[in-house]
Length: 154
Figure (cartoon, rainbow, N blue to C red):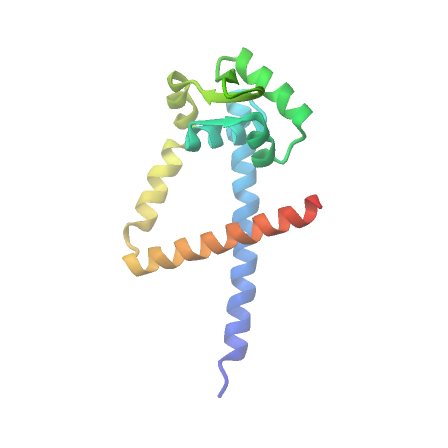
């Protein structure tokens, strides 16, 4: 007896769950951005800077999928709001290096605190092997998204 129908059904359920998770993640991001008085693109920029420390305006444009003109406006807005500093790259005066202001990090993390606590409790019951599977799955999904974004941009 073939296990194919059960596998096909499980794949359908996984795809549906993935779409719903992505939808809820997006709605959650919009709610957090609104609470902070930011746009989702602003939040993506600040999250990226929290991860990498500093980035060029071009790197921010790539990360947020915005035009350089839109990124210039966004960075000006974030700088005026006190979230980032923007300085000319001493090695290449044409480039701007953007850095998240460390004193604003806690404010940006606060809306995620309860979610992070719940996520930690959720994975407490997972084995190291199960967590490794989730990491591999997420890594592969991220690679797929990047490939598709490249395709859509070209």
